[in-house]
Image 1 (tube, rainbow, N blue to C red):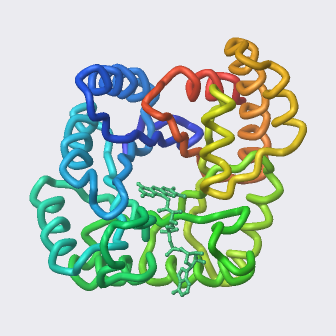
Image 2 (tube, rainbow, N blue to C red):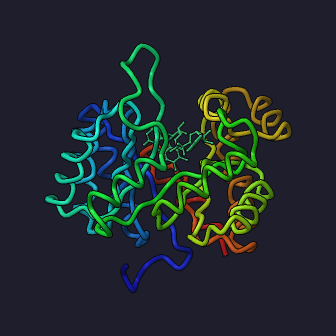
Image 3 (cartoon, helix red, strand yellow):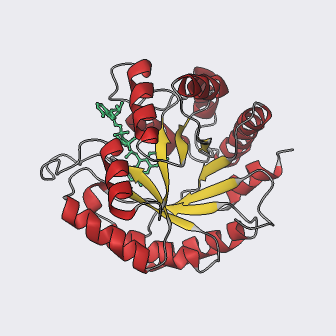
Length: 279
Ligand code: FAD
């Protein structure tokens, strides 16, 4: 960890681009965000290993910035031998942080493979590689969409952390109380690792609404209504989004959140605007 690290303990997530233009945009976002000395960058992984090579290439491109970069790794649809090889490759490349996930299998894409849940992946990584990797897992303050209840999801979350995770990053949310409630209940279940809130800057209402429906993140009615009212006025959407997300982040930090993890969608500006509004 760098001594010059950003005082709020921020991290930024990217996805692997698949065009030359996308790769250039990512490099520019990486360089701008690296100047803020984040704790780490992370790079997403396509379901069923569909971006395995692109994730590794992107991780290596992002690491050129000198910032620790963690590949996401999802296990659903994978066999142990395949993940063993991938872990070995990451070690050879000098990668020592991972975000370990179950992932979602796209319909029509093979069987579930040898792993059913993320706790099994965390156990497997620890069995195979000991303490080599710092492992982050996902948490859901508003409950994972497939969980029968928030309580059951919290128990599953605690099991996954206890399998050997060092930290957790949450799904994004717009209601700070959901996060504080989640953290309190996780602590009551014996979870001691940092739980870093995931932050989604608001820039495009249509995409945000579609994505939120799919991942089970609630957009409060007053935010939906206001964003709808702006129609295609993207400047007003961005300004309102910046205000809402900045206030959310300030409340989270004031309430003791141990950092902020931004879902950048490979754009630096929306996250930086929020960051610059924070005390
Ligand atoms: P799990 O922790 O396995 O949970 C999945 C469901 O199963 C939950 O409902 C849980 O309650 C239940 N469950 C868990 N363990 C058990 C058990 N032992 N017994 C019974 N039930 C159990 N997706 C990608 O494809 N690529 C990515 O790069 C990616 N990055 C992400 C990063 C973050 C920070 C977050 C929050 C999500 C990310 N996702 C990504 C989405 C994620 O893959 C999905 O939300 C997926 O549906 C669940 O993954 P998980 O690791 O949380 O699963």
